Amino acid sequence: MAIMARIAYASGIDTTTLLALRFSIAALVMVAVARLRGAVWPRGAVLAALIGMGALGYAGQAFTFFTALTLAPAGLVALLLYLHPALVAVLSAVLLHERLSTPKVVALVVALAGMALTVLPTLGDGAPAAHPGIASGVAFGVAAAAIYAGYILVGARVGRGVAALPMATLVIGSAALLFAFAAALSGPRWPGTTAGWLAVAGIALVSTVAAITLFFAGLARIGPTQASTLSTVEPLFTVLLAAVVLGETITAVQLAGGVLILAAVVLLARAPRRLEAP
Image (cartoon, rainbow, N blue to C red; front, side):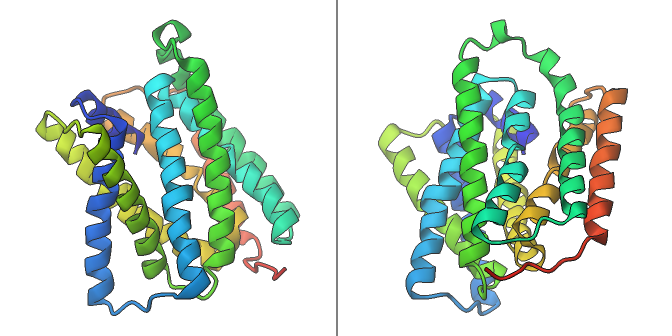
């Protein structure tokens, strides 16, 4: 997603418009798919909680993350965002009584180390002098991690018994309404190039429709700690795509980080998959 965001920003779009388009396009696709598949919608308190997850949790995480990308190097922002698996692990043990087994803890540490090795070499491309708002960018990046951790934990709690498709549709739809309203108030700044529009479409379809739906499906099966730890593969794929799409060089340190991330995935695959009830 970071690569597509860079392409979109280069076309002249602003954060509010980008997120309004991202979630609006994704919401239209999700509603259409949900209708075709005859999705069963939650009601009452669960419905209200899922709407809140989208309008407050996911929208807040998206806004802080994309704002951070405009203020600080993308590698640093990614590094800060991926503090969230550690936050999820600690909070899920305290709040959801999820048992932190030795394989889970080892996999978490290995994944975070691998993610750091994958991302840190990219910081050389973004010196502080080139990012005068870096302090604000760091603050937004940390906020994105904290909000995302809370969002995952709420999703693990509220989403029990709710299928991934209607759950993702409600979260995406409520975020779409919020950002569409915000973009209308501030005045949209549309992408100025075909590449920019294609990047927005990619963010909407790949990084939103597919990513959120699959994440919720995984969350229900393996719990918040394993799901968030597995998400550390994203920086690895970002580095690989940057090499293919943007011609960036992959260093030996990044390759070592990739190996550690894949090792963490193997450890989690061998770990018990039972989420203990509180």
